[in-house]
Length: 142
Image (cartoon, rainbow, N blue to C red):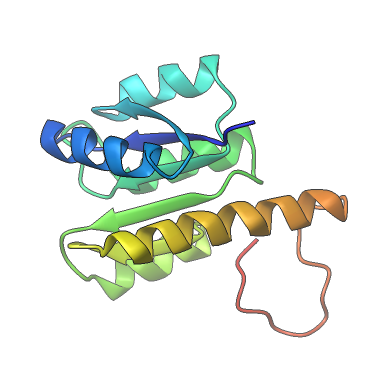
């Protein structure tokens, strides 16, 4: 079964381009042009991964992240932004973002990050937990 990804960006050309490229890799990709549309789609469909731009016209990627984690903490969220902002990246990861990528993102990097996030989610589900159970520090943010 294809993994379901919701792609959120307020720029139509990015939505169309990324949807085509990611779909070619065997994923089922839905798109949303903003926060409200994304929340409605997430209420109807259980997505395996959320991929969102940080800067949206009607909200931010942090707001998307907050809502996704409220609904289901095991759904990986990947944020991408046109500018590198360490404070935003730190806050996003603190809140549970799987990754924060800076545009332009190489397709190989994006696909690797998507696959790794989905693999990480699957491993956590297989062991029956959504929290890291290690006493040592890990590089994964659960």
